Image (cartoon, rainbow, N blue to C red; front, side):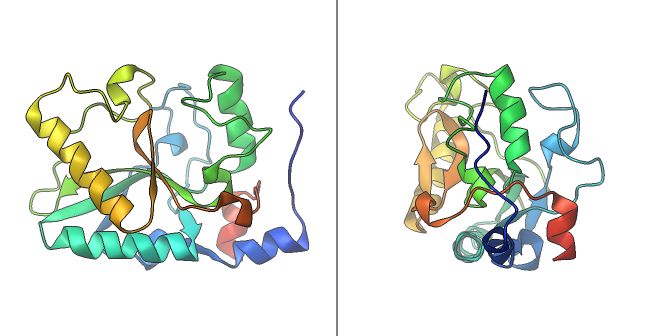
Length: 202
C-alpha cells in the first residue's frame, strides 16, 4: 500500500498561495494539457475535462518567464504538457508504470506534486507549428533520453536548445525524459494533493 504523504493542512494551503498560473506570468506560453484529455499514456482522462490552467511555484514561474523572454528573441514559444500535478494522479501513474525512470514513486512524491516540475516543448511563434523533437510526450523508451544520439541533426539541436536555456535559468533536466525540467531543492516544497478547482478558488 502506498503511504499518503500530504496533505491538506494550513501549510499546504500557504504553499498554494505561492503557486502561479503560468499564463499570468509567462509570455507566449501555450497549453496542451494532455492529462485533461484521454490522449496520454493511460488512455484515460486524469484531470477534470475543463482543466485549462496549470501552475508552478513562484520562483520556478519567474525563471520560466526569463526562458520565454529569451526564446521570444529567436522566434520560439513554450508549449506546456503538464506542470503542477495532484498526488492522486501520481498514484494512478505508478500503478501503470512501476518504473522510476519514467514515473515518480508516490511514496516519495514528485516534482510535479510540489509545483516545481514542468513537461514542455517548443513551437514557432510565426506559424504555431511544433518544433521537431526526438519523441512525443510520455515516450517511455531510450529515444527520449538526453544521451540518445540516433536522431537527425535537427532533433538533436532542438533538444539541446531546450536543455541549454532551461539549465541556464536554473532548471534541472531529467536524463530519461527530454521534456521534463525541475526547479531545484525539492525538499523545500510540500507534496500537494489539492485539486485544480480549489487552487483556482484560492
